Length: 322
Ligand code: FAD
Image (cartoon, rainbow, N blue to C red):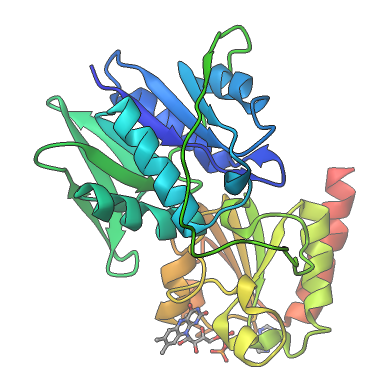
């Protein structure tokens, strides 16, 4: 029996999908033990019930005003204190921008090993085995922590979310923590305009490369994305050329994504781009060069001019989805 602690992530007042994936991962390995979620920030206790529906047994809410928004030092202090209070056998959180920043800090504070960026977790002969991609997604490594507490981050969109049971009760505890000596304070958040769909957790991504040729060219991709409820992504080629913001970049030095459907438009398929999207469940490539390397990883390839093909797809999906 293992006690598993999950750090819930909240964005725009909603629990991120990866939090439910962490609960699903916990259910795989808890072996009859307790699943506890920690929720940081004021006015967030309404999230406890939904965490319970997905499988959390207990929710620790820390309603501190310094935890309303992520800062590395406040969250590190809070998470370390929660871990010391609960004393879990296993800790999970999302491999998100917060997870990538926070997990190594907390692991270092507590002298723990960290299995980062896991895409699966399983019990084998009673031991927890993690699967994680290596060599930019070309190979997969099986990993276990030999002894002591297990700490891992879970890559979004891989483990999946478990069944919801609205009849499942959850126990909520409010916890008061002492947070002090902060070196960073958030005064204001200025958001860039986005399509509203979170790239890291999107189920469908329409992505553009240098072949899109201009910032205006991305409007054609955005129209298809709107019809599909998709997020828009980009290659570094497109970002470097100034066609779109670097926050859209997918690849080795950008975001790593695993959508159900990835539509690559005017992207050649350089190894650094593939590192961020080759684990997508279905890949569609649109490129006018039949020799483009993207076709080697694509499930469906369309050789043609994206400015002809993408509007046709938009039109057909519009008809099909009404
Ligand atoms: P190109 O390679 O120029 O390809 C454009 C494609 O568009 C071509 O295949 C062309 O046939 C096609 N095309 C042109 N016009 C049309 C049209 N009208 N219709 C259809 N197709 C058309 N890249 C990333 O993407 N992400 C990363 O994270 C990343 N990290 C990197 C890190 C390092 C250390 C280095 C060295 C490079 C990195 N790169 C990364 C860059 C990478 O090597 C490539 O240069 C980049 O991915 C190329 O972008 P692209 O495919 O959009 O452009």
